[in-house]
Structures are given as structure tokens and as C-alpha cells.
Image 1: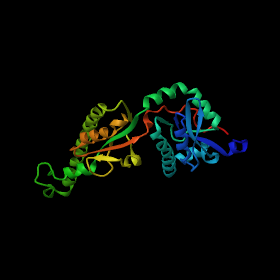
Image 2: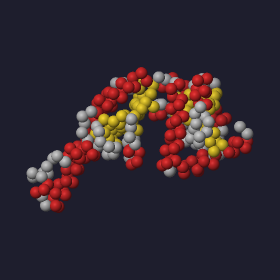
Image 3: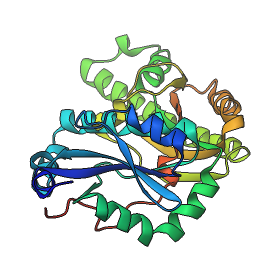
Image 4: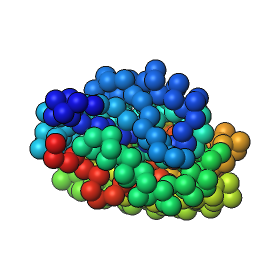
Length: 287
């Protein structure tokens, strides 16, 4: 890469994998976060899937500002995942954190060499495994539907109460319904964790999602209802690829028949939650 090109471009890194002819061919037909052609940077028995991206958009200040805008963040995540998903069928892939950008390809090679003793054992461990996500939430629509059939306390129905007392009674019933839904969801999450543990070889408990992120629907759902409610558990499981569908079926079965609970199962994915995070220095570097 010429000095002029280095000033104009930086290198976006998507994943670490083994350098094989199949991986090189697969990478060559992928387009990345800036619609750039992806390729491999190799050093010995490791490779990184990378692509040249405009420095003006991916230097530290511009990138930080872009990640604070939800549409930009979503587009970046889709592009990043598209490359990782395109390489995952070839074998073990270590997805790197979103927006891992380096000064040039020489720096990518240096990182591969410096972290070889970390990357290689992890590639061995993750070979033949996939990640499944399991999210357990309360389902307020289901909980309120069940609660509507319960008459107000001490009466035959709210129609016999004054407006003020009826309002307070309704608030108490909603609060009681929400508490019961939370307890049911927590018990369901514990039962799912026990069931999933019989098939998975690893588990990562992510922070429960809040706000807009909690509204993203998954690929399989038990409990009916619409997205919403309080996220109780947000876990990732590492599962042998040949037991992936069995895992999904058993998790959904463990969640059936639980009113006021929503369970989402997503996957199979490349093992994002089980790959090493990039080193702190793997942020955009001065050109």
C-alpha cells in the first residue's frame, strides 16, 4: 500500500481464522462495512479477515461519533456480521469486536504474531461449535390478559367501586401481576439454564438488555405475546454444531406453558461471546 493510500485508508479487522485457500476464496467475494472488498492478511498459521476503509470515516473521532447514532451503529453491525457469517461455515472463526480498526496491514500482522498463543488454542476450542442466544423476559401483554379475568379485591368486580377506589384496585392488580410475571420469568430462566447446561460446553451471562435493544425479536419464541417487558436473562451458549437444533428445541420446550414470560432463542451464530476481546490498543490508530 502506498503512502498516499495509507493516509486515505485504514484497515478494518473482522475476524481471526486459519489461512486456507477456501478462506481466501470466501473472503474475496465478501463486501465489508464500507462496501469494500474483504481479503486476508496472513502470518504463519493465522490470518485476519480485513478490508480497507476510509480514514475520514473510521479515525477515532469520526468513528466514536458514528457509533452514537443508532442507524449508523446498526449498519456497521450488519456489515460486520455479514463478513463473519460468510466465513463461519469454513471452520472456527474468532469474531473481533465491532469497529476494530488498525493503521495498516503491518499492524494487523503484528497483532496476530503478538497474540498467537491466545488465538490458536481458542480456534482449537471453538472448532465445531456454534453460539446460541437465549433471552428471557416478562411479557406484559400476556400477564395483563390473565390478570383482567381476576375480579377486584373483596368485590364482584370493579363496577361496584367508586372511580377512585377502582383506580387504586387496578393499580394494585397490575403491580401484583408484574411481580408474579417477574418471579415466573426468573424461575423459567433458571430452568432453561439447567436444561441448556446439559448440551452446552460454555455459557456467558450478558447484561440484561434495556430500551430499544430489548425490542429486537429473535429467531424462535416461546410464550406468545409481543416484544417488550423486562429482560430477566440474556445468555449466550456455546454448543456443538451437531447438537444445535436439539439445543434450540429443548430450550423452547422448557419455556412452554409459562404465562407472562417471553423466551427468544437466536442462532446459530459464530461464537462472538466466546472469542477473546481485542487488545485495548486495537482502536483506530494515528495515520
